[in-house]
Every structure is written in C-alpha cells, then in structure tokens.
Amino acid sequence: MDRDAAARWRAVSPWRLRRARRVLSRGGIIAYPTEAVWGLGCDPWNRAAVGRLIDLKGRHAAQGIILVAAEPGQVDSLVEWPGGEQRQRVKESWPGFVTWILRARPTVPDLISGGRTTVAVRISAHPVVRELCLAFGAPLVSTSANPHGARPARSALAVRRYFPTGLDLIVHGRLGGEARPSPIRDAATGAYLRV
Image (cartoon, rainbow, N blue to C red):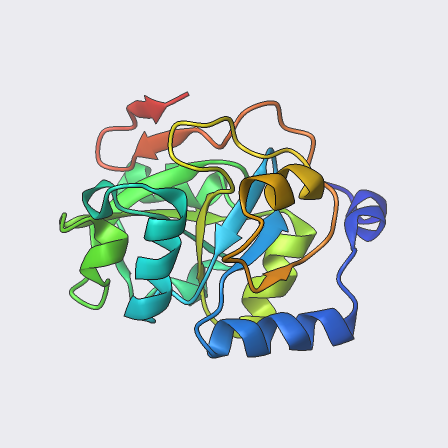
C-alpha cells in the first residue's frame, strides 16, 4: 500500500487512540475496521476480556483466536519462528493480508491458542489496525465482528446491529478493500487452511 492510500485510510485521531488504549487496558472490547471486514479485539492476556468476547460472539473457546500486530517484534515472545524458506515465506507476506499458523510459545494463553501448540498471527498492513496495536503496545485479539455463524460485519452500522450491547468502543475507519477475510496458512507446510 502506498503512503497516499495509507494517509487516506488514517481515521484514528490521537485522542481516539488514547481512548482505545484505555478501554483495552481496562479489559474492554473494541470493534475496528480491518482489511476486509470489521473485527472485534481485546487484550489477549486479559482472560476475562477474551472470555467475554468469546461469549459475545457465541463461539467455542477451543476454536482459538487470531492475533494481529503492527510488526513482527510484537509477536517475537509468542511464536517460534520457522527456519529457512518457511520463515522467508512468512516474513515476505507481512505486513499484509495473510494470517499464518505458527508454533506457539508457552506464553500464549489457552483461550487464544484454543489449547493447541500453535497460534494464528497476522502482521497487518491496515493503518487503523497498526495504529491500534502500536498505541496498545502489543498484539490484539482479532476476530470478525459477527455472532458465530453469521456473516461478518462490513460496516460500523452492521456491528451495532449485531452487538447493541457488549462493546466498549467502536473505532471508526474504512475497510481495506479485500473481498474476504484473510487467508490462513500453515507456516510449517505452506498449506492454505482458509482461502
């Protein structure tokens, strides 16, 4: 994405970023635009917040949840990077639209990994997502803003209709223009788990 496009997408004022950071730090749940659909996020280390988000969506804890970050350094303590060509394949796709399944370190909470030895991670190129992660100083939970089984929200209005209660903040901005949620790939094999 070029700088002009990034500037046009920038929709989070410093005041809104500070507010989002406060909400997240206090265990709140936010909604925000991503590359293709609206997402829900919270502090991945706040068990109560993650549990509330899972309940809000009506999904199973065993499914695991994607983490989104602004830069690879934000997830270094959470993943074991693959070596050789696998590592290069992952790093070349970021920042970008691909979510990778990577080996999780013991620091990843079970509610995030779904109790698995892996974790789903994306280093986003979307300016709003990146600004939120940088303001919070850590990765965020990133799951589509919809009740489990429903179509992902593609507008703030749809988010409000799905969740008239339960959200602590909606961070306004534009979607990134992708038609579908991010593809998910297994870093060990390169296989697509979601296209």
